[in-house]
Image (tube, rainbow, N blue to C red; front, side):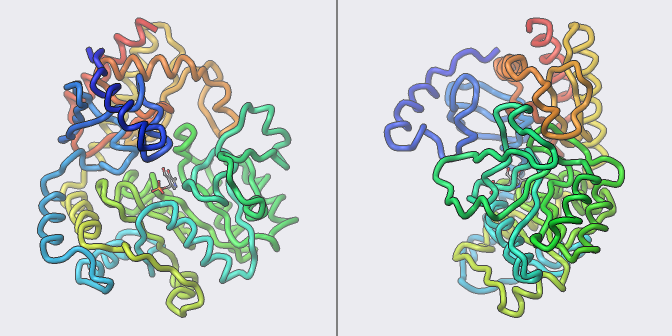
Amino acid sequence: MNSNYEKSAQLLERAKKVLASGVSSEFRKYNHPHALFYTHGKGTRIYDVDGNEYLDFTLSQGPLILGHSHPEVLQAVHDYSAQGQLYAGQHLQEIELAEKLNELIPSAELMRFCLDGSEAVQTAFRVARAKTGRQKFLRFEGHYHGWLDNVAYGISAPSAEALGDREDPNVFPWTAGLPDSSRADFIVLPWNDLDLVSRTLEERHEELAAIITEPIMCNNGCIVPKEGFLAGLRDLCNRYGIALIFDEVITGFRVGLGGAQRHFGITPDLSIFAKAMGSGYPISAVVGKRDWMELIEQGKVIHAGTMNSGNPTVAAALATIRVLEREMPYDRMYRLGQQLMAGLREAASEAGQNLVVQGLGPMFVTYFGNEGELTDYRDTFHADKGKLNRFIAGLHDEGIRVIGRGLWYISAAHTEADIADAIAASARVLARL
Ligand SMILES: Cc1ncc(COP(=O)(O)O)c(C=O)c1O
């Protein structure tokens, strides 16, 4: 049992004097029992300054698809960085990485590398606006597309009722400090309702440059699209000349080597890859069909960045993909994930707990509720968030680290023994809840 977080508490007090809230990303504030300080990670384990060990299902919010400190990734980063770090120019592995994405991802005819998901999303919007000559994008309630101004709305709401009319939802800003003008950039709708999107587009398609969606909704729940939803979006975008953008920041290299677009057989015009592509190094890609991305080629759309495609990040991505291609861990990740999902359901049923487990396997969500599976953001308000917090905190004290909103990620490093440990610990916590 982990119960001593004293050194982390002391470091947090020291950090708060110079780092706002002691952290460098908002989400890191919300750990149990407070923001923690870590010393190292290896494979499926991560260790904090108090000597606590955790079996890690957060994978650092998704990137660590091979687990912590994969030796081949570290070696590749070391070797390629020893040659140079950043050239303000091109290098060989950058082409190799682009060729690899082109081979694996159906829509990746042409691409650019960036540093993170947030800026790659904005690049896709710029391309879509430039090509269509229209200004707005359509986004969905509860989806997350980064922290920048025009996507910092519609991520959360005080209650399902507060969201109001499904046809014309109330939209809540996520943060203070947004320019009034950013509110005019988008339309928001509930997800997974093709009929509603279709009716909205009939009236408003002339305003829209793009529809952006997480192809599997992972930022609130872990919800697969309804049969025909993504294909329907594809048809509507074709009909009205709108860019279909898949935000594959989570699904990319997680549901398979070609992302959700290969998994579902729907090819978007533009898409974003980040997290699992780079094993924890800051690299993302905005990829797309040539007739969209060529606007960058033609110099009509500008995309830039001093730090883009530096040696360490490109080497990390190439090595990650090389290991994934060689070991093809996906069948195993699905199997282990589904084993864990089944084990959690069984443990919950034995403990008489209303735990719902939903997802594909490589990622899934746990929450407490009596209303069945989630289909969109509005459904998430049925869940008992207080009980989920107690479950996640209980797991944490048992040495099992899960993302606070109940999201679990499986890596290629997880073993049968890890899954058994996680089920046993969950059973103990569920019995105590
Ligand atoms: C679906 C999705 N899109 C975009 C982002 C933003 O990516 P980043 O945090 O790398 O800027 C995230 C981050 O969690 C995400 O989950």
